[in-house]
Amino acid sequence: MEMLSGAEMVVRALEDQGVEHLFGYPGGSVLDIYDALFENSKIEHVLVRHEQAAVHMADGYSRATGKVGTVLVTSGPGATNCITGIATAYMDSIPMVVLSGQVPTHYIGDDAFQETDMIGISRPIVKHSFLCKKASDIPLAIKKAYYIAASGRPGPVVVDLPKDIQNPKEKHPYVYPSSVEMRSYNPTGIGHKGQIKKAMKALAEAKRPVMYVGGGAVTAEASALVVQLAELFNLPVTNTLMGLGSMPGTHKQFIGMLGMHGTFEANKTMHNSDLILAIGARFDDRVTNNVAKFCPHATVVHVDVDPTSISKTIKAHIPIVGSADTVLAQMLEAIRELGLKPDVQAMEDWWAQIEQWRSRQCLRYEKSDKYIKPQQVIESVYRITKGQAIVSSDVGQHQMFAALYYPYDKPRQWINSGGLGTMGFGLPAAMGAKLGCPDAVSVCVTGDGSIQMNIQELSTCMQYNIPVKIISMNNQALGMVKQWQKMFYEGRQSHSYMDSLPDFVKLAEAYGHVGIKVTDPAELDAALERCFSLTDKLVFMDIQIDPEEHVYPMQIKTGAMDEMWLSKTERT
Image 1 (cartoon, helix red, strand yellow):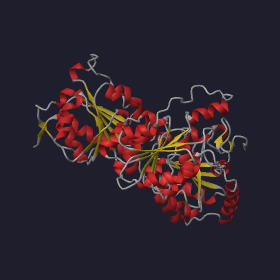
Image 2 (cartoon, one colour; image 1 turned 90 degrees about the vertical axis):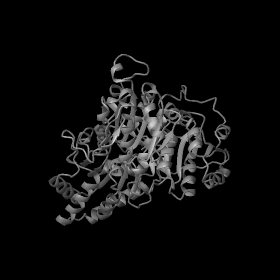
Image 3 (cartoon, helix red, strand yellow; image 1 turned 180 degrees about the horizontal axis):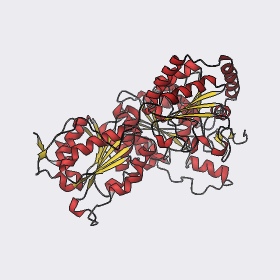
Image 4 (cartoon, helix red, strand yellow; image 1 turned 60 degrees about the vertical axis):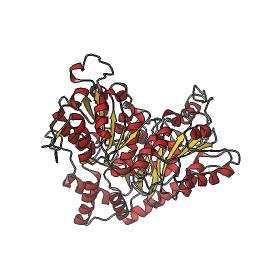
């Protein structure tokens, strides 16, 4: 039997698990693991400049590839710096394993140097956590961590590793489990057949149905089945912010994103529907607006792998627990078995109404000779990348413009912090996506506020030659904060302007990258063409945009789904 130290077990377990990329930052309590990693050539370690960025990189890597992201950090501040990244992954159900160092077991609870209770601190924002107290615990804990992170409703798992159990001088028998069984953890994958038949009969009888598809469909690789069911019943399909790409953005049956900044036609369709087929979506507050006024005429069919998400916010009339891919396949089988067909005339009438709402062209905007509009930036990026880029965004106005004006035709193309809304997510996420998908064009859409939160990772990009493209839309302000202050606080701009921004071009060049500044709308396309032609270099685009542009549509607070601002002067 192979004899390994605890530190060697960590590295070997990651190898046996198939881990290819490890994002981390060394420190005292994990130096034995880093020493074991020094001898290893199978895992590519990426040395970040801040632990938060390590977690966001692992997150972006996971979202782009579907694999479990992996992080290694030291104890104390190294571990606590991960908390925002862990919460980001938890809110968006992203599979991840975070390995954190810990003080020796006999010091735990003594407030030793760089001690924090990582298990306690992270408990509300992880799917599960493990504290290994013996070296022999390591292989099984790591195997369980990856199983839990990736199965059911995915999420982050923390494995806390005290310094003493890593001791390189103490060798122990090493066996990596081929599988794990956990009596208390058995996620449901297959939907209830009776409920599925009931749901499909209701769908066939509906006059104004709509498919509402969220991130669960992306996670479950269910996009092809979404399209198949939608086309079979001629259903209008709307996506959540997290679900974009699960229905091709250029498909004629796609009616756009719904919710707070959703399209006029998507929100009107939802509000006036008589049946909502919700797949892998959780009816969060950025979709529903006022729950008391939510879709008053609709029968709700809710499919989710997490039973606690069903009827949590909106009552489901036909709840179905199961994985989106499995349940959709069961639905298609039930349709064939029961010989169900849509009401053709009713669907023609329904689509005629939807086309009227579409004709409003709610995303139309006025171009300017003086200012670059943020909408035209995203449209130009879409055109130049031929719609094939992986787009990671930070959080704010630019995030909504990127969601609305870049049609995503494939899942895992759109990467953003939807649930937590984490500024500083975009750049490291784009880096993780590029490492996971090296042949893809990886774009970070950001703003002058967000980019500065993890801008130090420009150094990591240089060290590892990660040629992402940064599209920074610079309006010298915290754009979404400013918009809200204009709309809801009588225009009082309280601490939302940024008066001392750096010269981003010089800053990018100082890190060894290419910087391009654009202020003239007539020069935008040429500058972006140059940016994307430099395939082997990171390019930082500092694009000066109209500082007064707002994101529309925008739901009216406390209203129904279809109550929206359509511009600064027009509301439904």
